[in-house]
Image (cartoon, rainbow, N blue to C red; front, top):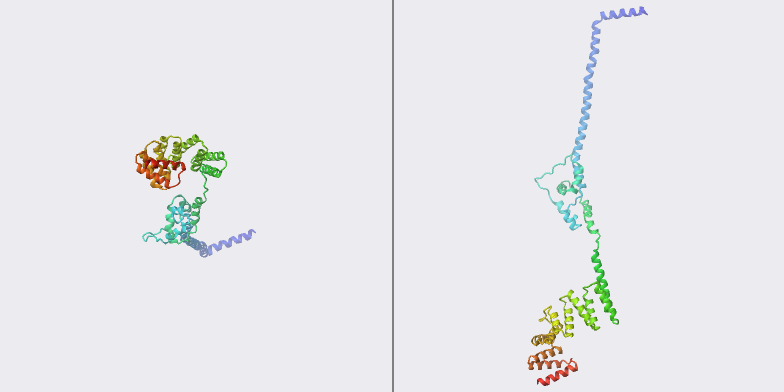
Amino acid sequence: MSLINQMLRDLESRNTTNNAPSALQQNIHVTQAPSSKMPLLIWSLLAIVATGGTYWAYQYGKTLAKTPPVIVADNIKRDPSPVAPFEQVLAAPNAVTNAAAPKAEQKPPENITTPPVPVTQPAPATKKAPTVQPAPVVQSTSTAPAVQPSPPTQPAPAAEVVASPVKNRPITPNPSTTTQTTAKQRADTLYRQAENNFENPSAIVYKLEQAINLDPRHLKARLLLAKTLHNQGQTDKTAEFLDQSLALFPDNLQFINARAQLFLQQKNPNGALRTLQRIDLTNSSNETYLSLLAATYQQLQSFTNAANVYQKLVSVNPEKAENWLGFALAQEKLDNPKLALEAYQQALSKNTLKPSVVSYIKQRLNELR
């Protein structure tokens, strides 16, 4: 083995001395080979990076070009505010569709250009803006003609949401109103029962009193009770009840006439005159009031006033014999026999007086002739 090794070393030493230029060239070629491959590798990597960057830039630019219309359309579709103002929606819930047509026909100003929506605009702002403040409603109407969205079918739910509480809100009855209505109904029922009762006066009075307790201003019940008490001969109770009624209805002519008539029956003309003078109907055509006023003046021996009122009564109802009789008595007291004679004759011609009154008139006619 050592001999072989020695031979190999000798051969190597020869090759080193004899072939020096070829070895140098081999060494040069060995060192130049790596330097020629590296730029190719680097350029390949750069080409790959450039291709990938170009493709990414193309995709990114395509995304940017598509994003603004989608955002605008999405903002318009999600805008819950109605096209019409809220005042019109509240006044007429069905006016949303009618107000949408004029809004769609409006043209944007020529000098105003709609700016593109930036990509970085946050979506939550467009959703909250219509509910927090009404400014986004103007933006939606200004951008609507440019994008031309579908007919406003989505604002309708907003109008229904606003208007439905107004339509379907339950009306709570007022307890006091319900109680008063119930009391009036019960009072009317008791009054009708008393009005249709012709046999038991005590039951009539009881029912009328109950009706008045439920409704103190029940006028018909008060009038019927005063008449019933008077027919029963309860004069004091009737007078007290009429005074209470006049406190509630001071200008009621029926209560005034009834109270004045009661004063005259009690021989109290001063009370009757005070009651009648609550209202001034001297120049009116109410025959009952004028008859009571004339009789009151006659009891007070104020014959001039009595004659004037009877003359008014004769002109209002010339067919009533009592009017002519009162006028004749007043003229006789004023020493006007001619006028008294004519009035007595007119009273007899009506043929409606009682026999006792007719006998008195004939006696006065014989004395005046």
